[in-house]
Length: 394
Ligand SMILES: Cc1ncc(COP(=O)(O)O)c(C=O)c1O
Image (cartoon, rainbow, N blue to C red; front, side, top):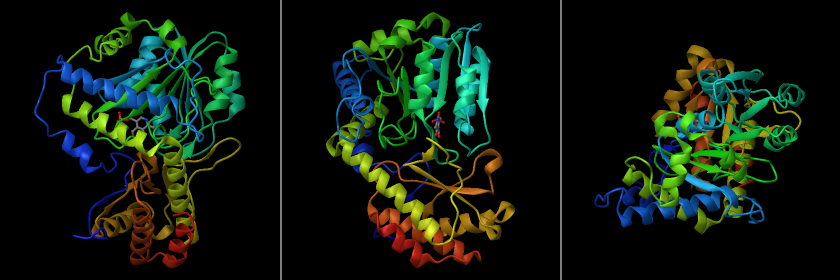
């Protein structure tokens, strides 16, 4: 089977994984309290620490003191890590300000509503966060600010550094969901004032789903109250065990192995090259789709820009609403998988990811297959113009 026929997963997670990552999960089982497992966890921690703290275009470290933070891996996806961050840092009487301009910003707000006093700074999904409203909402009485860096539901990149400055001005703990950016885009921990950063295995780290990772900076370490959190999410306990390269409870051994291999592959590519590749591939998708005659969905203003990992495109009238299946069926028939819109954006947009290890021909195939499926569904698109525009970046 040649590359043109192979199944191509372009959903914004899970993303394709390499054969080395896959094969690592088939090794014989070991105890999660064995030295063999501790070695695996340490490899994962080292690779993740590299990703969390050296994701700059120059390759320079993004933290002043590399020994001051902690890198944790959880048996559970990023939603668990989001809940762990909120519940360890805020109690029922504490105020958490959550920025919402998409599904995952809303998820953080919902977690905060369940466990603390929650205030939302909210705008329509796909619109830019109003920074003046953030500045008004965050006060000296705020305990935690949560935000999503790359809003996967809409394909826009929110301005972490601006929000971090506001949080620092009020000495507020700043928690950032970098689930679909960390490992694929630049991430500046100290310059952006980030206290807790979260990512998921199955996104830009290109590992299988089931685990997530957290970087806890020194200010957050001082502020954590593990006993206020759900038993499974006590971060004091997770940090104590992570120092011994173990988890408090049984570790998902095969998934930790696959994560260790995935982050070592990232380190071999090097974050500066990886960031540049992701930026080129996202630009290829954006320009490719626009050149064939489609419109991008997000409304990016000010410091808010298009995502470098997820591209969201508005569905034209011919494949809008109930007719969207005509497009998605046409893409499926060509053995490619893309995503529609989530919640109320269903039938309004489609989304593709360039997270992980995609090659230029795979990106090109994504542009072509969407164009051909659009044309089959009666949309007037110029597929060749789209491909020519995409190739400029590949
Ligand atoms: C930005 C963002 N945050 C959080 C999550 C939650 O991840 P999970 O469903 O793996 O817990 C996702 C998943 O798509 C995401 O894209």
